[in-house]
Length: 317
Image (tube, rainbow, N blue to C red; front, side):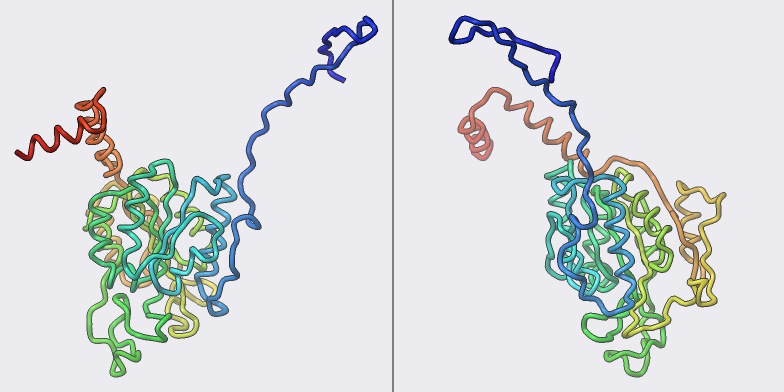
């Protein structure tokens, strides 16, 4: 019983001690558990590297104690872009190649959210290539994880923008003749302020890169090698120590603020390096637009809506 007592007059005039409840101490809100985050059962092929990335996304949300109303998951079209179906969070499965402009709208209108975008090499660098460049240069605050498997898996083995020379597919039965793009070089040159590389076969490293990108105030890009076991088996064995490969981390003396050094690292022969290549802090589009809005709002302080409209119409005369 509480030590706080209040005396009240009973019907017979007797005094009775009535306990006044003491409010309980404020409890810290718990973060989400994997059971609360997981939605539909993933429909990827058994052995797909995307399973690893999804599991680590769940782990990231649990570790950082994020809540449903503070996180959103966006994707375009492709195997990896099925992410929003498997995550119980506010998100959207958007149209092919357009995930970034959609996510930009969310980030700019809701700066309080953690915006995560997931895609593949086709969605990011082919039909969505132009959006990738412009989102990077504008430095919109979000985390973009691209699961690169060097092939179009959803459409059953077609050449993708990152397919190596000589790769035989349904669209290049004679072997790919177009030079593949280098996602890391493209991200750095486009103006991304956080550029990192990892592989789905190294879960601890994937989680570390996702955390670092999430904490970055700007556009965070991660290229994650994710093997398509159905249509390009063994593509990344050279980066997997368990299969005789070598996982080379970015040298400890690398200066992540040196753009030219980062670009040089990105040019290393496959399997290349893994880790944070480039990181730089500069004003985000979010911050710039917030200043513009604040400036213009100060000019109409105290005016009614119709008066603001009238001022706009008057300027048109």
